[in-house]
Structures are given as structure tokens and as C-alpha cells.
Image (cartoon, rainbow, N blue to C red; front, side, top):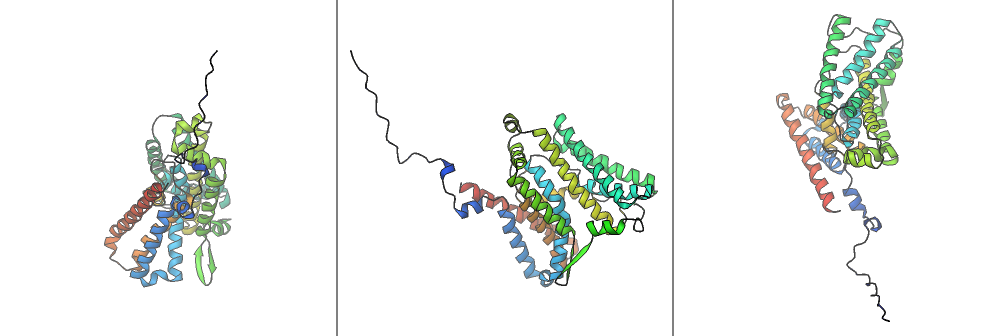
Length: 355
């Protein structure tokens, strides 16, 4: 009777790879892996640039103006960034802001109701537009680019058509003497003072949205769903992620941002021009991309989008403070945005190389 010898198990090799989850990550590597790092570096570069070429740029009042310009973009850039992380676009975001303002104004004026009634009706209708975009995307085959382009065209036509039908002109009637206008203005378009410098309340709205969006992305299950959907829709669906609900929720988030921006527009100027907002959707997308969001989805942060909006605000106002020829405004704006985007792209590539 013969016996079969069992070969001894091989000794662990020093070349065996260690599980990546057990490796300690250095603070520098963690920093390099952050999607907003490139935009932060770009923001510092833009600030230094205009501080050198425009003396008035570093004054407190000037910085307040920059923050205000950034906040009006950032309020929309943050939810647009979350949508892009989820792998989708919304080309109707710009005109939706105007639609929100028009609904509040015309409903309040025509119904002679308290202004707050119009504000909440506007919220419901604006959220319904987001639901429409999300449902159309999840129940049909066309990509979000086509669906939201259709919504963009419909809203543009309705903004003008309904305004002329109800008001007889391309702008709404004044509602400044109506009940509730003063309190609504305090919420959406007031000014507060710190150290003798006036700041717009939109800055607080902007910061609040950044905090909430960051908490959602980093501390909740929904944040994991957003990254998963943007990284691979079918793979996310296979592991039980509610893809359709996640996308509808993201579109509702964009609608909520549009509602806030629309109310600020209305209560800042009292009347609303029906043709406003066209083209602003590209600004929101640009801010998100500068902030580190990938066009392909699955990567980015709310903080990065906020910094992208800050870069845009610094460039747009820095050119004014530098007193450059306004004919070259878009050229300088394009150069600064392109440089910031390229810097962000380079930092991201370096981060990937260190993994």
C-alpha cells in the first residue's frame, strides 16, 4: 500500500502584494486624491493674479462683490455638480431659474395673493419640472442632453409666451407693494453687514447648499448611490442601487437650486424679464467641471463646484476691477477658465499616478 505525500504549503513570499485596504495612506496622497484640489490651486492662482494686476481687487468691498457673483453661480453649480457626478446633464437649468421667478411673480400678481403663496406655488411647479426631466430620462431612451434640451426650448417658449399673454409685455408687473414682499426679500435678497462690509444673503444660501451636498455625498447612502450611478449605471443597478429614483432626485435637486436662484432674481429686482437665463446652464456646467467633476460622471465634489464658481466670480469681477478693455472681457475670461481647467486636469492625473 502506497501513500501519497502532500507538498508543504509555500512560504509567504516577500513579493506578495498586500491588500490595498490594509495600506496606510499618507496625508499627501489623501490630499492629492481629492477632486477639488485642482480647483483650489486654480483659485489661489487666479486670486494672486488679480491681486497683482488690480489693486482694488483685494479690498473688502470688492471681495464682497466677488463672493456675491460667485454665490449666484454657486447656488446652481452645486446641484448641477451632483447631477454630473451621477452621470447626467441639465440644459434647462438656466431658463428654469427664470421660470421659477416668473411663476412666483405672475401667480401672486394675478391672484392678488400673499407673495409667499406665489413662492410656494413656484417651488411645487419647479420641482415638478425636475421630476419631469428625471422621469423622461429614466423611462425613455434619449440621453439627458436631448431630453433637457427639449425642456430648455419648451421653458424658453413658455416664459415668453405666458408673460406676454398675462402681462402684455416681456416682463412681469411690479409686486413690491404686495403683502409678504418685504419678508420674502429678507429671505432671498437681503443684505447683512460684517465689519462694515455688506454681504448678500445668497452667500449664506450658497454655503448651506455646499454643506448639505457634501454631507449627502460623503456621509449618506444616497451619496454612495450617486457615485455608483455615475460610475456605471448597469453595475449599480445590479447591486441594488435605485438608479431611477436617484436620478429623479438629482434633477429635483437642480430644480430646488433653480427655485432659490429664481426667488433671489425676483426679490432683488421686483420684476423679471422673460428672456433671462438663456446660456447660464453652460456657466453652471463650466463651474462644476473646473471644480473637478468629470463629464463622464462618477467623480467630483460639491466643494469643488463651489470653488469653480468662486473662480468664475473672481475672473468676471477681476477683469472689471483691473479696468481692462471690456471688448476683451470674454477673451480674458476664457483664458483664465481654460488655465484653471487645465491645472485641475493636471492635478487629477498626478493624483491618479500616485495611487
